[in-house]
Image (cartoon, rainbow, N blue to C red; front, top):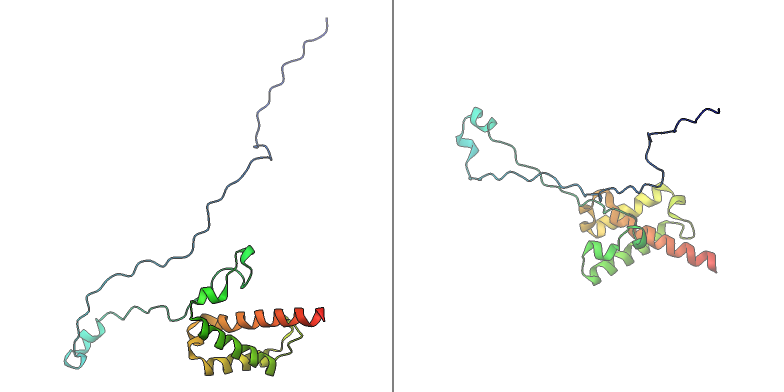
Length: 163
């Protein structure tokens, strides 16, 4: 008489590969809330040196505006619109953009992309733009000037290749 096959039982050690993983949405960095202090005006000249040392230092506020996430003018890929992000009046934005474009025509090779530009010429454009418009110094790493240049060079390169 043939032997009866034992019933095969198995336990899965791994979940099937068709499982769908969901990740929580990314959160932006929010700094911890500042503690509130009551501020009194006082004359530090009348205080003893020990008392002056015990005065807590002022909490530094962020001095520069950080660059937003994503790439400029890549809205479909999580980027941002530069004019909307800055929130400047339209006339001020256009005037600044036109000046940065004029500097690019003077100092850069407009038929080449951003990556192929020489660093000394880019530095000149950054310095001249910040001299004319001091508001640009409020942005961390001068990302506004860089974004305006990227948009201008991208558009000028695409016009040159299609001609």
